Amino acid sequence: MVSQEQRRRQLAREKFLRQQQRRTQARRKARLRNSVIASVLGVVVIGSVVLYTTDVLKGDGKKTNTAADVKPSTTPTSKAPDPCAKPAAGSVKKLSWKKEPAMTIDTSAKYSMKLATTCGDIDIALKTAAAPHTVNSFDFLAGQGYLDHTKCHRLTTTGIYVLQCGDPQGTGMGGPGYTLPDENLKDKSLKGNTYPAGTVAMANTGQKHTGGSQFFLVYKDSPLPPSYTPFGTVSDAGMKVLQKIAAAGAQAADPTSGNTAPNATVVINKATVTKS
Image 1 (cartoon, rainbow, N blue to C red):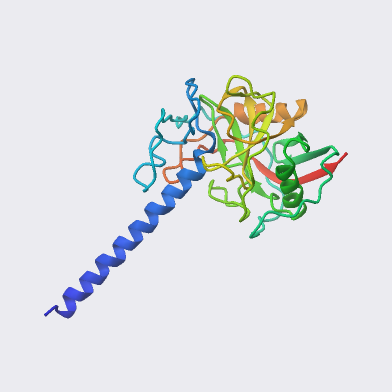
Image 2 (cartoon, rainbow, N blue to C red; image 1 turned 90 degrees about the vertical axis):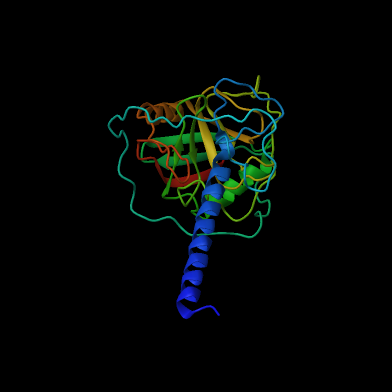
């Protein structure tokens, strides 16, 4: 017969194992979300998904990447003084929707998005006709204030050169509750598996049609396969803001999420989408 003390110990062990399992699953989810913009370190991988770490899909009940798994920069760059201002007063809204918003934009018109950040304004000309679902989604999210007061949580400084934003959680795990179809993957600007400086593209989980609200801004030509919806181009003035952010460097990789956060305090105070 099992004594009361033995039963108590058994329950304690089971509780501990459940906690460990939940923590492991959370780490895996964070790494999967960050598979988005992994560095290829100069290696062009054709027909494969470029992953954030070498073990993103390993040990998760899924097939491992059959091509070359590659690893991004996790080495912190030298820290410079923060070139950005303090965030505006306000807090991130906790919003979520079950399905993609209905199409309300005029797909034949021109739209632009302004990110009023703590580091300066970043103006983006949107590719409405080529990526209508994506542009419509950002028009909707901006109108809801979804991006306001959110941090740009990731800066890569080796292999690929991007600033990643659009996650209200600031961890790389957040999203609006719905996903978007991939669009414009044959854009003429994507030559030689390279996303040129000034490109704004959607982040995803490494699987098709998994874009949400996270996006990245390319501040220097970056080798990436055409798997991430390009939906905008940063203005010349906006590029100067990105260069300022990049010059401040990045922090060491977070042990849980794998994010290399920018040293600069990059917060989107207000995001607006405007029809020309």
